[in-house]
Structures are given as C-alpha cells and as structure tokens.
Image (cartoon, rainbow, N blue to C red; front, top):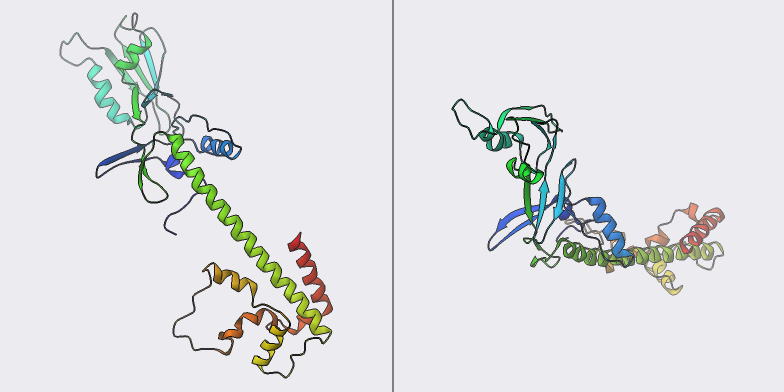
Amino acid sequence: PNWYCPIIPMVLVNGSDGIGTGYATKIPNYNPREIIENLKKMIGGEEPSLMLPWFNNFTGLITASSERIVVSGRAYHAGKDTIVISELPIRVWTQTYKESVLEPLLKGESSNDSYVLIDYKDYHDESNINYVLKFRPDYLEDKDDAFICSLLKLQTSILTNQLVLFDATGTLHRYASVLDILKDFYRVRLAFYVKRKDYMESLLFSELIKLENQERFILEKISNKIVIENKKRVEMIEIIKQNNYPSDPVKAFHKSKALAKPSQENKPLQETDDFDNDYDYLLGMPLWSLTYERQKKIKRITRQEKG
C-alpha cells in the first residue's frame, strides 16, 4: 500500500506540528472517544459535534474562540494571601514556569517595592502540580480572577488556522476546521470498508463454489460417473473439464485480485506446476475424501456457507 488507512484518524489523536516549504501545520490532540462518537454520528447520517482539544490527565480548562483555542491552568485561593496552582497550561514545564514566572515575582535581596510574592513552595510530583504562593499582605484584596490569571500566566492559546495535511491523493490540503479533516477521513475510510466487504463476499462466494464442486465430484466418483483410475494426468484433466468442473475458484479469485503468491525464482518446473495445477482441489483430495462421511461433512459445510 501507498499509505496506512487506520480505523480512526490518528492525526487527530496524536496531533501534528511542523514547518514545510511554504506552509506550516499545527494540529492539537483530540479525544479518541469523541472522534469515535462523531464517526458513529456520521454513519447514522448526523452531523458531527464540535470537538475541543484533549490532553490526557489535563485538569485545566479548554475553551474555543474564533481562530484559536484557549488553554487555562487551575488556581484557587487557600487563604487571604495564599494561592495554590494545581495545573499549568499545556506544554509548560514546571522548571521553566518557576524560572520565567515565579522568580521574577519574588522579593529579592534588593529593596524593590514592586515585588508580589513573599515566598512560594512546590509540592508537585510526577503527575500532579502543586505550587503554594504566599503574596505580600493585602495584595490580593482588590484583584479579580482575570488579573491573577494574567499575572501568573496561566493561559496559553493554540491556533486553529494551520490545519495543513496531505490528503488521500497525496495532495497538500489546507482544511478549514478539524471537522473537515474528520469528514474527509470518513469519506475515504468508508470507501475502503465497501472495498473490503466486496472482497470478502467475492472470496466467500469462490469458497462456496469450490465446496460445491468438491461435493459433486465425490458423489460422481462414488457413483462411478467419473472414472479416472489408470489414466494419464492429461486425460484426467480432460475428463474433469468434460464434466463442467472449473479450475480452482479460490485460486482464480486471487489471481484476478493480483494476490496470488509469486512463484519462486530458479525453482525447477514440477509436474503439477503446469496448467493442470488448478484442478488439484479435486484430484489432490485424499482417498478418505471419497467416503460417505466426508461427502456429508462437505455438504454440511456448504449449507453453512450459504446460510
């Protein structure tokens, strides 16, 4: 294959971020469960619902605006002059945040009256953020949440106008929205589901014809309608053809789909490698296949395939 066609659009699950010649792409991560639900809606003929970026274990707030996504961390008051930060914006590291945000707000050794923080402690671990900030007395009295959020830089944004991807034809395409990416994927994936269904139905039909021919061959051999004992191989093949038996239907199916196994190079030509090889599904059956029990078993399998 030229490319992999997954069950759901993995580019929306994993995200994409990069720069090419003349274009840039930036696609955030989305919740695979929401993607699956939207695909189910489209299967049912409904329009997909709006999706917001999703990051595993992120406890902050994600909201949408015109051309960007706003990602906010979490902070709450733990006393008159104390604020606890329990989540940072996406892709903001604790060490970077401490050096670029908290340290400049902290009172240093110099007599700078513009300081904000008296002290801060970090109690976070590998999976949880926990900064305890102690502000100077009465600093927080007239400050609203928007000001504190701006002061502590607890908001970042993700642009949604750089959705550039290669489509199924290998053409660079700029998508207007994430839902357009989902709809384009749905159209391509649905077409491949139809192709796979047609392939499986055709293969099952070929297997059914093969079983029916084997069943008829056993019956005609038992009743001596077909006599192939003490015959040359060419004569045996001719008898089979005269009784309207086709060549192996399953092999014929695979050849038509260009899925037959390639012949091994430098392999010496065997007697069964000639034109008669397609009748091995009849002539290659062991003698045990000519029993009454075997004929009944094949008949039962044939009925199951038809059902």
